[in-house]
Length: 457
Image 1 (spheres, rainbow, N blue to C red):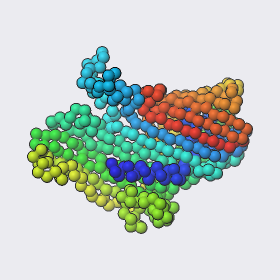
Image 2 (image 1 turned 60 degrees about the horizontal axis):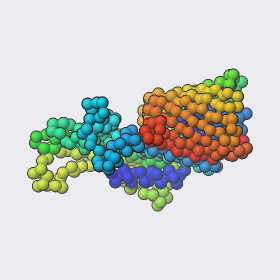
Image 3 (image 1 turned 180 degrees about the vertical axis):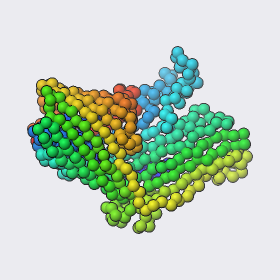
């Protein structure tokens, strides 16, 4: 637990001090990311670089400030918490053994069924732009920032033990996951406009700050007649400093009777080589660690030639009972720690995402948008589950556009968003809120909040 807190603290520090990913703006968030066709300027980078070809809509854009934070889990909502964990109407603890109205299932059984087989997951993401280093001019753009992603999960067996006790003869899976990723990116994007369509591409240099994660885990915990038994293990790998490359490609059509269509693949090529000494972080490790002791926090040797590490933790318990525990309390649930040999450099594929979108504009009143997307990988910010997003933006109000959207599928199941802006001649300010895992505040299991200020012309 202490290790996880340390990783989170240093990760968040680096994100805030290094600023972040500029091309996910509040307008796109308010449209529930149905942005493959309608994004323009620097906002097109990260969705569809071909949209830079619409120079008649936008010839110049620059980020002044952009901030987005995401927090989510896959179980707890406000409604669920109020129903089961805030007591009954008299303030007494809720009786979980009672059967649900009209069902033979108890409330306890219902709660356990709501936890995914993969366990309880919680996650956090933060992004903010680097001022003056996110600019689009004509059909070209330069962007930069830091991508941060963190997700941890606890095994469902842990909650079964808490709610049902360690039943004799039953085994509980001890698999856990942890992912922390911090990557700085510098991108150059361009679009080539043709008479009826545009094509575009983005080339990104990925400078890895650090990553940490459990790359394998397993084993079980059980109670036998002879005592407690466990063969749980997890291998914890981490590295700082990395070099990589990513490429986005995109295509869209010009307006066809107020309709537009587009397709894009983000990170169609994408990889990072971690843990070697040929990168910015490694070459400047002395200066960086004068501010933040990164290797100390990630438990990497302070040897100047070491930038990665992997450790195997195991919990071997056999026949531990009350008598044995009282006789030797120090040995109960003690973890064995073994350093695992590993190569000097690690190659990580950067997750790819496919996007297909369309939009229809009705006069100068509103725009309707739809996006279909899915990850080509199933880790970090990508999910292989298909996601359909629908959104509308009311532009009749001119300087005060109002937008809203909803999505189905993907990693959260359902999403809903709302946003608004103040658009002046040279300056746009936008604000948005998106609910994750539910269509209302009561049922949502996470939120995304974004605010952005851009100079545009």
